[in-house]
Image 1 (cartoon, one colour):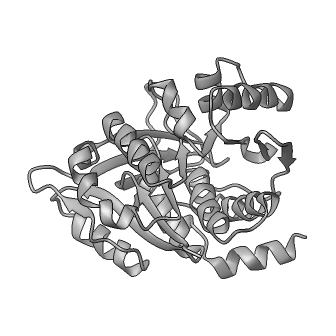
Image 2: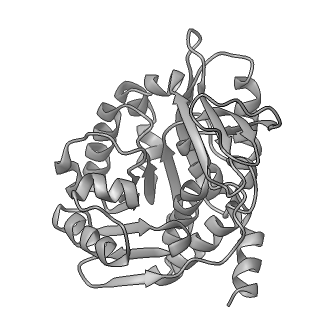
Image 3: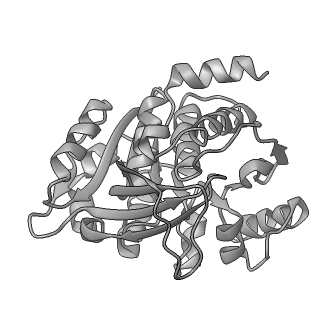
Length: 307
């Protein structure tokens, strides 16, 4: 069985400040702890899939700055296929500024940099490896025209697409019909469905609405309140694992990357969701995007300890 995962998306240099509490507007907090790590939803999901045991190819665009060489080395160290990570000499890589409070909540601002240069023309050069995919994973930190191109390409080759609709932005809603798996949080589900998700009941209504719009499988993550998922056959709920959150930055990305691995391994859907939830739970107990992402051995051990 083909198990190759192709992640098409963004990468960022993350500049992080960890503090006891997040500042108010106009306030300066002077006792923060600084970290420089690597992130970006695409890179996070690719790393998460690789650490969960997946055979991962990453399609991405980076710039030319002081951080880029180490970021590329990190991709290779994770064991990902990187021949289609394109480099733009006249651009900087994407950057993110992150402030994290004591409860793990964060403020986050992103400058896309070279991520905006991941055009359909570049993705077309990666067609050979995309054709080999058992699943394609995408987010929404790359140009919309590129996302639409990938959906059309995936449909031509009958490859399922997991689309993590994050961050929420305008798009052609017809492309939901080409989305095998749509992963959203409360904000993103509300944005598309026009149903404000405030609790489990409204979450289920939003899932039904998103199914009506065309996606085959909807996964609505509710953070510490668990996951609701639905398709034409079922609507189900998986509770979250109880952990002490230090930083929620890459929880959703970890969920998506580990989901792709378990999905291509052919596990039952409930097991796929549980595995992904365990990976995300472990991620929030650590600080930083990619530094927080667990390895397969850690996820399996966590599942055994939390049966």
